[in-house]
Image (cartoon, rainbow, N blue to C red; front, side, top):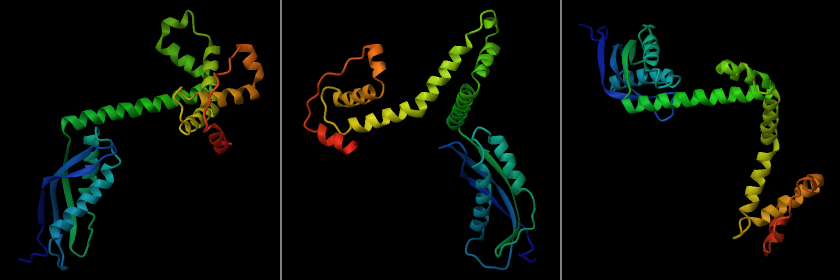
Length: 235
Protein backbone atom coordinates (compact mmCIF):
# COMPACT_ATOMS: atom_id res chain seq x y z
CA UNK A 1 0.00 0.00 0.00
CA UNK A 2 1.24 3.48 -0.86
CA UNK A 3 1.47 5.22 2.54
CA UNK A 4 1.45 8.63 0.89
CA UNK A 5 -2.07 7.99 -0.43
CA UNK A 6 -3.46 6.69 2.86
CA UNK A 7 -5.48 9.07 5.03
CA UNK A 8 -4.05 9.51 8.53
CA UNK A 9 -6.09 10.43 11.58
CA UNK A 10 -4.80 12.34 14.59
CA UNK A 11 -6.74 12.67 17.83
CA UNK A 12 -6.54 15.84 19.91
CA UNK A 13 -7.11 14.15 23.25
CA UNK A 14 -5.32 16.70 25.40
CA UNK A 15 -7.28 20.00 25.41
CA UNK A 16 -5.72 22.94 23.57
CA UNK A 17 -6.55 26.40 24.93
CA UNK A 18 -8.03 28.89 22.46
CA UNK A 19 -8.20 32.52 23.55
CA UNK A 20 -11.70 33.95 23.25
CA UNK A 21 -12.90 37.53 22.89
CA UNK A 22 -13.66 37.48 26.61
CA UNK A 23 -10.53 38.63 28.46
CA UNK A 24 -8.95 35.93 30.60
CA UNK A 25 -11.25 33.12 29.41
CA UNK A 26 -10.13 30.42 26.96
CA UNK A 27 -11.97 27.60 25.20
CA UNK A 28 -10.74 24.04 25.74
CA UNK A 29 -10.49 22.38 22.32
CA UNK A 30 -10.36 18.65 21.57
CA UNK A 31 -11.14 16.83 18.35
CA UNK A 32 -9.88 14.73 15.47
CA UNK A 33 -7.93 15.56 12.30
CA UNK A 34 -7.74 13.73 8.98
CA UNK A 35 -4.87 14.41 6.60
CA UNK A 36 -2.63 12.83 3.99
CA UNK A 37 1.17 12.93 4.21
CA UNK A 38 3.34 14.23 1.39
CA UNK A 39 6.88 13.44 0.35
CA UNK A 40 8.70 16.08 2.43
CA UNK A 41 10.18 14.55 5.55
CA UNK A 42 9.58 15.93 9.02
CA UNK A 43 10.46 14.54 12.44
CA UNK A 44 6.91 15.13 13.73
CA UNK A 45 4.39 15.68 10.98
CA UNK A 46 1.49 15.26 13.42
CA UNK A 47 2.76 18.27 15.37
CA UNK A 48 2.72 20.31 12.16
CA UNK A 49 -0.83 19.19 11.41
CA UNK A 50 -2.06 19.94 14.95
CA UNK A 51 -0.44 23.37 14.89
CA UNK A 52 -2.12 24.20 11.57
CA UNK A 53 -5.53 23.27 13.02
CA UNK A 54 -4.84 25.23 16.19
CA UNK A 55 -3.87 28.41 14.30
CA UNK A 56 -6.95 28.31 12.09
CA UNK A 57 -9.22 27.63 15.07
CA UNK A 58 -7.61 30.40 17.12
CA UNK A 59 -8.21 32.97 14.37
CA UNK A 60 -11.95 32.27 14.70
CA UNK A 61 -12.17 31.79 18.47
CA UNK A 62 -10.60 35.17 19.27
CA UNK A 63 -13.56 36.88 17.58
CA UNK A 64 -16.16 35.09 19.73
CA UNK A 65 -17.25 35.77 23.30
CA UNK A 66 -16.69 32.74 25.50
CA UNK A 67 -20.37 32.39 26.43
CA UNK A 68 -21.13 31.87 22.71
CA UNK A 69 -19.38 28.51 22.85
CA UNK A 70 -21.73 26.73 20.45
CA UNK A 71 -21.48 29.48 17.89
CA UNK A 72 -17.69 29.43 18.14
CA UNK A 73 -17.59 25.65 17.76
CA UNK A 74 -19.86 25.72 14.70
CA UNK A 75 -17.78 28.47 13.08
CA UNK A 76 -14.54 26.55 13.64
CA UNK A 77 -15.97 23.27 12.32
CA UNK A 78 -17.41 25.06 9.30
CA UNK A 79 -13.90 26.33 8.52
CA UNK A 80 -11.98 23.13 9.26
CA UNK A 81 -14.53 20.62 7.96
CA UNK A 82 -14.24 21.73 4.35
CA UNK A 83 -11.71 19.94 2.16
CA UNK A 84 -9.94 22.79 0.41
CA UNK A 85 -7.44 20.51 -1.34
CA UNK A 86 -4.84 22.45 0.56
CA UNK A 87 -1.27 21.24 0.09
CA UNK A 88 1.88 21.92 2.01
CA UNK A 89 5.26 20.25 1.80
CA UNK A 90 4.28 17.89 4.65
CA UNK A 91 0.55 17.23 4.28
CA UNK A 92 -2.57 17.71 2.15
CA UNK A 93 -6.37 17.33 2.36
CA UNK A 94 -6.54 18.42 6.00
CA UNK A 95 -9.99 18.39 7.58
CA UNK A 96 -10.88 18.46 11.27
CA UNK A 97 -13.78 18.34 13.71
CA UNK A 98 -13.40 19.97 17.12
CA UNK A 99 -15.32 20.19 20.37
CA UNK A 100 -15.11 23.23 22.65
CA UNK A 101 -15.68 23.22 26.39
CA UNK A 102 -15.81 25.71 29.28
CA UNK A 103 -15.91 25.00 32.98
CA UNK A 104 -18.79 26.44 35.02
CA UNK A 105 -16.69 29.20 36.57
CA UNK A 106 -15.44 30.46 33.21
CA UNK A 107 -18.96 30.35 31.80
CA UNK A 108 -20.25 32.42 34.73
CA UNK A 109 -17.41 34.92 34.30
CA UNK A 110 -18.14 35.11 30.58
CA UNK A 111 -21.81 35.88 31.13
CA UNK A 112 -20.94 38.51 33.71
CA UNK A 113 -18.46 40.14 31.33
CA UNK A 114 -20.98 40.14 28.46
CA UNK A 115 -23.58 41.78 30.70
CA UNK A 116 -21.03 44.39 31.77
CA UNK A 117 -20.17 45.14 28.13
CA UNK A 118 -23.87 45.51 27.31
CA UNK A 119 -24.36 47.84 30.26
CA UNK A 120 -21.42 50.01 29.23
CA UNK A 121 -22.70 50.20 25.66
CA UNK A 122 -26.13 51.25 26.93
CA UNK A 123 -24.60 53.95 29.13
CA UNK A 124 -22.62 55.27 26.15
CA UNK A 125 -25.80 55.29 24.09
CA UNK A 126 -27.67 57.14 26.83
CA UNK A 127 -24.88 59.68 27.15
CA UNK A 128 -24.91 60.29 23.39
CA UNK A 129 -28.67 60.76 23.40
CA UNK A 130 -28.46 62.99 26.46
CA UNK A 131 -26.06 65.30 24.63
CA UNK A 132 -27.79 65.31 21.24
CA UNK A 133 -31.46 65.06 22.16
CA UNK A 134 -32.48 65.01 25.86
CA UNK A 135 -36.11 64.46 24.83
CA UNK A 136 -35.19 60.92 23.69
CA UNK A 137 -34.21 60.05 27.25
CA UNK A 138 -37.51 61.43 28.50
CA UNK A 139 -39.43 59.29 25.99
CA UNK A 140 -37.40 56.24 27.03
CA UNK A 141 -38.22 56.93 30.67
CA UNK A 142 -41.96 57.28 29.92
CA UNK A 143 -41.92 54.10 27.82
CA UNK A 144 -40.53 52.16 30.77
CA UNK A 145 -42.78 53.96 33.28
CA UNK A 146 -46.16 54.48 31.52
CA UNK A 147 -47.83 55.37 34.82
CA UNK A 148 -45.80 58.62 34.75
CA UNK A 149 -47.65 59.82 31.64
CA UNK A 150 -50.20 61.54 33.87
CA UNK A 151 -47.50 63.84 35.26
CA UNK A 152 -44.45 63.54 32.99
CA UNK A 153 -41.10 64.92 34.23
CA UNK A 154 -40.01 68.35 33.13
CA UNK A 155 -37.89 68.15 29.95
CA UNK A 156 -35.87 71.13 31.18
CA UNK A 157 -34.38 68.93 33.92
CA UNK A 158 -33.00 66.55 31.30
CA UNK A 159 -31.59 69.47 29.34
CA UNK A 160 -29.92 70.87 32.46
CA UNK A 161 -28.45 67.45 33.26
CA UNK A 162 -27.06 67.18 29.73
CA UNK A 163 -25.44 70.61 30.08
CA UNK A 164 -23.88 69.75 33.45
CA UNK A 165 -22.41 66.45 32.28
CA UNK A 166 -21.15 67.96 29.03
CA UNK A 167 -19.50 70.87 30.85
CA UNK A 168 -17.98 68.55 33.42
CA UNK A 169 -16.37 66.36 30.76
CA UNK A 170 -15.15 69.36 28.77
CA UNK A 171 -13.21 71.18 31.46
CA UNK A 172 -13.98 70.19 35.07
CA UNK A 173 -12.21 66.84 34.67
CA UNK A 174 -9.17 68.64 33.31
CA UNK A 175 -9.18 71.08 36.24
CA UNK A 176 -9.38 68.25 38.76
CA UNK A 177 -6.55 66.41 37.03
CA UNK A 178 -4.31 69.47 37.25
CA UNK A 179 -5.19 69.97 40.93
CA UNK A 180 -4.38 66.34 41.66
CA UNK A 181 -0.96 66.67 40.03
CA UNK A 182 -0.35 69.92 41.89
CA UNK A 183 -1.27 68.41 45.26
CA UNK A 184 1.20 65.56 44.73
CA UNK A 185 4.00 68.14 44.57
CA UNK A 186 3.13 69.72 47.90
CA UNK A 187 3.85 68.33 51.35
CA UNK A 188 0.76 69.42 53.27
CA UNK A 189 -0.49 67.93 56.52
CA UNK A 190 -3.53 70.21 56.55
CA UNK A 191 -5.25 68.60 53.58
CA UNK A 192 -3.85 70.20 50.43
CA UNK A 193 -4.75 73.71 51.55
CA UNK A 194 -2.14 75.12 49.20
CA UNK A 195 -3.99 73.59 46.25
CA UNK A 196 -7.25 75.14 47.44
CA UNK A 197 -5.52 78.48 47.76
CA UNK A 198 -4.29 78.32 44.16
CA UNK A 199 -7.70 77.17 42.93
CA UNK A 200 -9.64 79.88 44.78
CA UNK A 201 -7.26 82.60 43.62
CA UNK A 202 -7.58 81.52 39.98
CA UNK A 203 -11.35 81.15 40.15
CA UNK A 204 -11.82 84.50 41.90
CA UNK A 205 -9.76 86.24 39.25
CA UNK A 206 -11.74 84.58 36.45
CA UNK A 207 -15.22 84.98 37.99
CA UNK A 208 -15.31 87.58 40.79
CA UNK A 209 -19.09 87.93 40.54
CA UNK A 210 -19.48 84.26 41.41
CA UNK A 211 -17.58 84.78 44.66
CA UNK A 212 -19.68 87.80 45.61
CA UNK A 213 -22.94 86.08 44.72
CA UNK A 214 -22.29 82.96 46.80
CA UNK A 215 -20.19 84.70 49.49
CA UNK A 216 -17.31 82.25 49.04
CA UNK A 217 -14.61 82.61 51.61
CA UNK A 218 -10.90 82.49 50.95
CA UNK A 219 -9.27 79.34 52.44
CA UNK A 220 -7.14 79.64 55.54
CA UNK A 221 -3.62 80.93 55.06
CA UNK A 222 -1.05 78.31 54.29
CA UNK A 223 2.62 78.55 55.12
CA UNK A 224 4.87 76.19 53.23
CA UNK A 225 8.43 76.87 52.16
CA UNK A 226 7.92 74.84 49.02
CA UNK A 227 5.00 76.94 47.73
CA UNK A 228 7.12 79.27 45.63
CA UNK A 229 9.07 76.45 44.02
CA UNK A 230 5.91 74.44 43.27
CA UNK A 231 4.06 77.44 41.87
CA UNK A 232 7.01 78.23 39.64
CA UNK A 233 7.04 74.65 38.36
CA UNK A 234 3.37 74.82 37.31
CA UNK A 235 3.48 78.38 35.98
